[in-house]
Length: 190
DNA sequence: CTCTCGATTAGCT
DNA sequence: GCTAATCGAGAGA
Image (cartoon, rainbow, N blue to C red; front, side, top):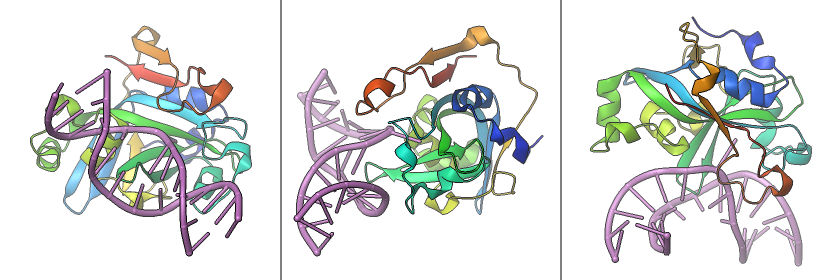
């Protein structure tokens, strides 16, 4: 069943990132419905996190959505060509989000096979830029409410045992000084 | 207005 | 392992 709005309000971003593992991310586009189980996440958040776009409560047109109450989509362009999908979490006025770095496709196999062309199936949605490319997520989804019917999360009763979860530092944030080593990346290997 | 560089990926060596 | 691709956010003038 679809996750309700309250679920997203946990003020601890790492706990939220861990919680999203095993949940289904679903996207409905004009060409069909597709989705998969979330297998890799990263937490960003708190005004103190130097790796977070909202560091030091930096509020701009782009980061404003991170300050919304949890349960919205934050999609932005990185390296001029890759869209990154994040789930805004936590209470209002705290910049907090969870980056979805990988998904195991379960729904819309044919649609995604078409989108990903000749790319090997194991690479369909393993990597933040690949997740959006596979599911058809673009900046048009930025700020959308995740309790709506365009993009949402589902709990399918899947239990992820702690022993199948690996905690590591986050990727690609070498600039974040003392926050570089914080183990806020979660990888689920079923 | 201008300049720098990024929460990355694919393709080639 | 190395790096080109590609563009807009954010900062400074």
